Amino acid sequence: MAEEKATDALLLVPPGAWDAVFGHERTRERLARLLREKRVPHALLFSGPRGVGKKKTALALAAALLCLAPEDGLACGACKSCKALAAGTHPDLFAVLPESSGKAARSIKIEQVRAMRGAVSRAPLISERRVVLIDDAETMNDAGSNALLKTLEEPSGDTTFLLITGARQALLPTIVSRCTGVIFGPLDAETIARVLEAHGVPEETRGPLAALSDGSAGHALRLFSEDALPLRDDAMGTLEALPGLSAETVFSLGARLGALERERLLEWFRYLRLLLRDLLAIYGGSSALLNADFETRLFALSGKLSEARAFLIEGEATEAARRIQTSNVTPRLAVEAFLLKIKQ
Ligand SMILES: [Zn+2]
View 1: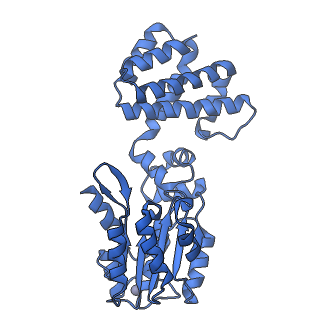
View 2: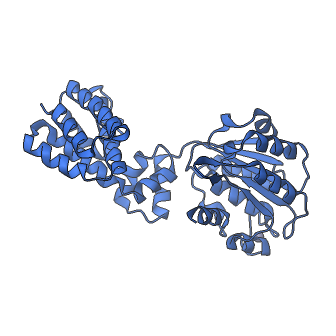
View 3: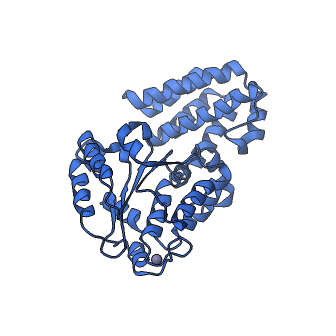
């Protein structure tokens, strides 16, 4: 049922949706200009990494296109169309989202594309036009892609297609060429910190989360909800304890870390490796660190741990994570073996 909930949430477009899009100023200006001048192309393809705001932008654009009384090209937030969007009940917004079936990966099926084709053949009910939003468009199979292509080749005039993808190269080239491209890049750390602030994430954790997010606000929020920073703190503390690691500590650490859930333990190893990567960068003379908030501690550690040893630990951490993931060795044994190997 979580799936259905996600679908509902996707289709809720609150008033002011445009203001909820962070960053991408030039893209927003471009779209606003097209709206003002009523020149929005028949089909747009939003591409770029996950979690940077493609869908939010598409929904804000849809609201503006469907609005009955747009102000300066943007949705008014008060008309019948805007109210229906806020309630998630707009009959003229048709969403095509990947569906899961059994164990197969989520994908867009030919039946969904057929249903969409049926819907766009009828006149819009509230608005002057219809908007079709196709999310994760790259998950469409060949039959679906060809059916969509047919629709794109016969523009009906009152339908705007908004395709969203994180993998533009996986789409049929003929679909890509029928759409006007809108490319979204990763977000800068400052913008991600603003998104985190808007979601009520405490100030002190915004910077570190933004730095670890690969430019994706969605990823930063996921890291926050998964309580990732304490794991990273733990990995940092472990690295700092390494120079004087005793056999006793190896077993207490093994017991503590071995008690973590497998996924969390793998996450712990991921942070350990990110920290080691920073450490290796310091030896290499770089000061552009991923874990910038640990700069002082990492520099102090670089004086106690040799480059060769950091390199060795990095290799062993990769191997330990691989073993935890692929073999049925208990996490505790894998952690102990790892610590014994890297102990001086
Ligand atoms: Zn409106």
